[in-house]
Length: 83
Image (tube, rainbow, N blue to C red):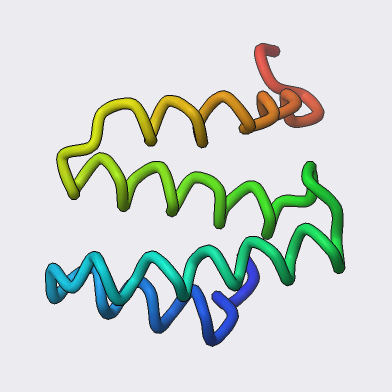
């Protein structure tokens, strides 16, 4: 697994400290950067989308996590899975 980028690490730290209002712009910035650099379906972008959904869930905003989770691409099965 790749190391988290500095934005994701910062947002995780802020979220763990329950500083949700500070974590949100960090994750939104990370999402914009990753979407532009890698595209919407890249694993790093998808991880950031999931992180934003998790953040909103922790904040108690039920509609927001659903909006972000709707953007997640289902994972493809790994080779040899189910054998």
